[in-house]
Image 1 (cartoon, protein in one colour):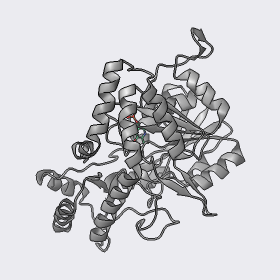
Image 2 (cartoon, protein in one colour):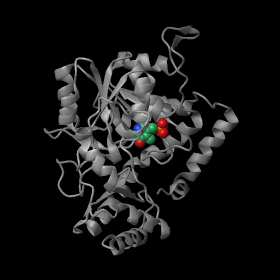
Image 3 (cartoon, protein in one colour):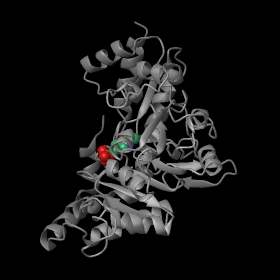
Amino acid sequence: MVDLVGQYAEIKEEVDTSISQILEQATFINGPQVHSFQADLEAYLGVKHVIPCANGTDALQIAMMGLDLKPGDEVITADFTFAATVEVIALLQLTPVLVDVEKDSFNIDLKAIERAVTPKTKAIVPVHLFGQCADMEGIMKLAVKHNLYVIEDNAQAIGANYTFSDGRKQKAGTIGHVGATSFFPSKNLGCYGDGGALFTNDDELAHTIRGIVNHGMYRRYYHDVVGVNSRLDSIQAAVLSAKLPHLDNYCESRRSAARKYSAAFASHPNIIVPSASKKCDGICADCDCHVFHQYTLRITNGRRDVLADHLGQQGIPFGIYYPIPLHLQKAYADERYNEDDFGVTNQLVKEVISLPMHTELDDEQINHITETVLQFIDG
Ligand SMILES: *Cc1c(COP(=O)(O)O)cnc(C)c1O
């Protein structure tokens, strides 16, 4: 699904030099590489504070701890996402409230959020699934109306821009009260191990979070709040610093591959290609709203599973993100849920298939993949 070897070749010299420097200086934790990456990412995102941490799941958990959410508080998030989002809500003994998503964008449905708000609701966690922002303008308006926090799960959309209706653009993850991201190797900005970060423009929240990631310490050996141990190590920061200047190019390579896929599939009656946000026409020809963490098709003739088997036999990688709605997972099932409220997610889990998507895809590979799909799809 990804080609990290090809990508490494291009930044090898810089990465190798930084890593051997860290080995020679033994500045493994909290070295200067972490601070300079933090500053570089703040500048790139146009956000006041980046707080690095150990992974994206921690970033989500720490965001909720930083906002002082308490057991019993209800947190609304999408039914169609990776489990990490709902896992940390449950782990903190908050009450997850899963809601349905939109068919076109795969993102959380604003109207479903609105229906799920109760007096106990404290936060919304929109997930910018597959590389495109949820309806942040609508979500921020709703949050103001009901006095809710917004925590963006930006693990799949770093580098994406969100365009407001007045034309203003803001980077994904910097619009809500706090954003959380992951630098897992296969993410759009990935390191060579685990890594994550939080983003916020709120000085006070940033200060709180910096203590939480470091055992709740604001002064050495004084523990003011319950914290965690969650650090980005210097080697990962060095890798990320080498990659960050290329991130916009990486995103453009992905968009270019997505355009080629979509051109091949667009007119097929049983394939629905991913659509960009409503504000853009076509498939992001001149637009930066989608960074295609995944390129996900919907197969509408019931042949998704046989297509997946066929791709497997042909040695073409694919992914089913995600095969089971979260509200049907054993860990997160809840008798309060009504099946009728999850019509879209229940349909998407049967239709979606993601094709190989990375920065090193060439035309020959794309043609081979599209031809294999098109030759098989109708049976
Ligand atoms: C990858 C991912 C995470 C978790 O990130 P890790 O760094 O693996 O902990 C959270 N949410 C979403 C949507 C993700 O894709």
